Amino acid sequence: MFLNQPIKSPEEDPFYRRIRITFVIIGFLFFILLLKLFFLQIIKGEHYRQIALKRSLKVITLKAPRGNIYDRRGVLLAGNIPSFTLLLDRKIVKGPEGDKTLKKLAEIIGEDFPTLKQDYMIACKKYPWEKVPVKTDIDRDLVARIEARKYFLPGIEIQVEPRRFYPLGEKTFHFIGYVSRISAKDLKKLAAKGYEANDFIGRSGVEAQYEDILRGKKGRQLVEVDAKGRIKKIIAEEEPTIGESLVLTVDSTFLEVAYDLLKGKSGAIVVMDPRDGRLLAMTSAPGVDPNKFIEGFSPKEWSKVVEDVYHPLLNKAILSYHPGSTFKILTALAGLEERVISPQETVFCPGYYRLGRRIFRCWRSWGHGQVDLLKSIEVSCDTYFYKLGEELGIETIARYARAAGFGQKTGLDFPGEKSGLVPDKAWKLKVFKAPWQKGETLNVAIGQGALLTTPLQLGKFLVSVVDGGTIYRPWYVAQIIDPYGEVLKEFSPVKEGRLPAKKRTLALLKKGMVQAVNGKDATGKAAKLKNIMVGGKTGTAQVIGMKKRVKSEDLPYLKRDHAWFMAFAPADNPEIIIVVFVEHGGHGGSSAAPIAGKFLKFYFEGAQPVL
Image (cartoon, rainbow, N blue to C red; front, top):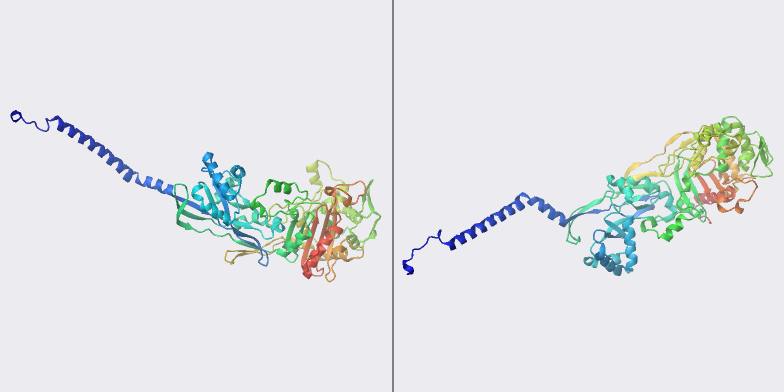
């Protein structure tokens, strides 16, 4: 029967139709797949390759070491040492998984979990960027332990960076300054200059003033990383460039000796070369160890610093105070130049000076008797200068004071310097809306009243007096050098002008100051040396007005007088000047002059001073 049935063609057979339809569908799907592959590989291939590349490659910033700071003999004042910082990535170390990582890390570093987590949370608040520093300057053994277990510590990174180091610690704090980690506020302003999160920046002193010179140029490292961000290999590297270094005019030994001489006191010492105005030392006490600003203070340590009655964060060498009797040299200069006095003219001092109904007392209650110019400087007679001040008037005193550099910054390239204040009639009218009184002139004539000067200003003034009238701008950078020691820039003295005084006037002032140290009744005899002739002037500045005479040492510390002494040596050919300021130190002759004497003895004889 089958043989007699007609055979159907494939087109008519349902089975073959189903197979054909299936192949068409498969072919269509395959065509769609080919189109998709073509689009991904040819049209968008480069785009997706870049995404894959970015996910496996990472650019790491290599910190650049800051340039070094040296003294005039090449002694290191600020340098760098290798340091390891523990960073935590806040995007990874978070939530329950982050706590697990912190617990593992706490076990490795030998710290309890709550303390470590608290440190981490504090760091996250302080540094609002992706990777926050939790531990700084960790030792190599700890680094090795963390690196060995890094696979189990996602989000943990050890950063190698140059750490600033200050060999003399607190002794150079106010002059050299310090660096600390950049803040979020700073970063907003400085990002355009290439600063990044976790960078260090100069905060005060030389470090801040020469930030752009000292900071180096960062390097870059292109690395391949795995899915957890761990480095697999280095692809390319651009090495960082160390910053340029500074050679200063100061002497590290002078800085140390000056600071040690102020031990237990609050004050400042400025030492200069009168032949060209260069700084040999500038120190303020007490100080703070600048290395602690890198390591970090505990809350207890920081409270101790900010609550210290001696104010260790303030640089007293550039702050303003009443100069006391040191200012009498300026008053005498004005008197001689204006011919209001002659060197031989005498004034009788009964222990006070009468101005109308007011009595202005001399520091020596029983008086000095008859005194001329030189004797008045030797014994620091207030009565003599009260009379001279009245005859000169405030406008004349103010004019000479400003010409000598008072009431304005010295020009030293140093941050934070105060201008001081030279008061006059216009100033009082503007500030107090009141007329000037004659009694105020008498106070200014002896360095009191509204008059304010800085130790650095007094140093600049004394340089101009003992060097024949030349006014030098104080300076302290001798050279800028590259990392190989090649000199890039050399600095020279800058003459700003001359004192409005004849050489004869300056010679008389120097002679008076020599008597103030070596005379029979000298107030500064504590600075006298055996083989070197020293000239100087004491100053005792009242902090508060007293109706009755009270010994300074019997008053509460903050109400005691400030002590001053400025000196130069050798008298016939000065090569050094020194200004000593002791805050609430009492009398200049008994508190500041001995310090100057010990420093000068060390300078000329090389013997370590007895503290």
